[in-house]
Length: 85
Image (cartoon, rainbow, N blue to C red; front, side, top):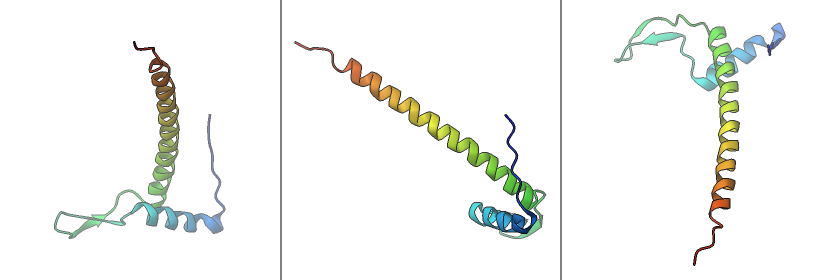
């Protein structure tokens, strides 16, 4: 499956700004002391693309985990019904 998102040019910067702000993109890299050491080699657009992909993966993993947990609860409930005398 190939997924393609087309964002209208008029909305592209809005999307980039929203994702970068929400996920903490930094245009400049800093050292441990907080001093600027240079521009971030990952552009805001690249960062946005990466965050969208990571978000999709996270959503899928969360749903798979929920399904597995539910299956485990059902299986545990079935074995817990063993008669004890």
